[in-house]
Length: 437
Image (cartoon, one colour):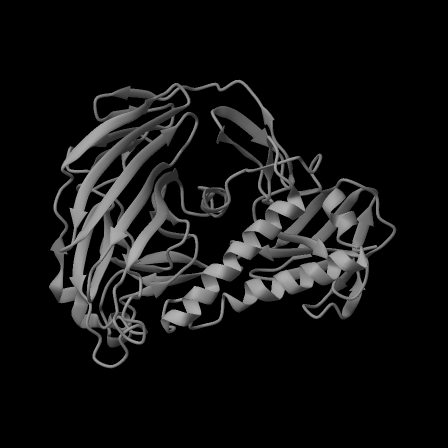
């Protein structure tokens, strides 16, 4: 691929290293959760603007949809149904499905979604199983008093659970798109004392998830905003994604240890599944979850006053989605669906055909990069489901040698190459790095 060849130039390598370190700085432990002083975020806004413009300069602007993930995908992009292999260019195809709008009912071949005039999800029927996903109205916006005893911006104390109140219902709604590839309904509502929220509920043709794209003008004090989904699912544990893996936490408070886990950090999804059926809430930029009984929640916004009295005040844009599925989260393809939701197609001049793809669902190709200490191409995989097996990785070109290395790129031994395929043996939860020469 052209960008890998370009990355081998000394000047480009140095610039990529600088930008990568600048990106990592934004993930420092106080910048990331919002617990720094205001001056830090002025610098962060400036640095993110530079990173975004540098990315545009690196990959170029164009009209070709590029899939930057290790999962194949087929979804709506720029008004067209697009299909793309892992790490490759997408191309327009004919859709085999249409989405329909009838008042506040959105429907495609996979889901039937009924909305309430108050902005809630009244019903989400998963057609393949015939199951209703919701036990009661979902997308319930809740407000909590958020006054930690000790550390304002760092802690969420359990006492907040006793202060829940529902946000006011939507004041108006309108249909923005009627299909055939996309249906959207917009809701306007107030939240808190001084804040407003606009939410666009979206269902695309062929899509198995209903998306909620949200813009909030937030001006609250010591208030925590959450969204709740009461699911028609019974399970004693919920699953939360974390880097290169997942964590399971109880959905009950049977012990003191359980009660201490009332809020759970997670990345792209949280899932509640029983035998044969489940549902995941996918997020694009929210990392606090909780589940008690059958109610799965996401923490959306806070408003602490120390150390930054203006923390979180202003306009926020984020999205989350409800994804019902047959079987458990592994069989339901939640890892791949959450990744697609987080990383939409990027329109560029194109990168060519698929660089590499993995057969099977357990082993995920998470990174394609240049090596730090050589001109080799680096592939980093992780086992996502707790499984054991052998995967075959199809490569776009033939390589002379493949080496297993550790995270510091110290060699561990040869990997198996069979023509243009890399053969990878993996164990549960294993992270693997391969260098291709």
